[in-house]
Image (tube, rainbow, N blue to C red; front, top):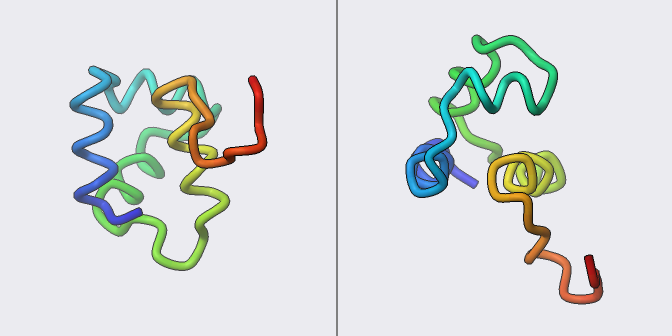
Length: 65
């Protein structure tokens, strides 16, 4: 997931940097860093962030939750 994709997803789901930092229990500076740089080499972290933003795990077809 690129930084631009992360920004678009956050805007679509209306999640602020402050809200996402609270959900992931990390500083807002790290959220800002990921919005700039994305997750080029860590797809598992990207899926965790996607779940924190949307509340859905659509990237795992075998997951029924």
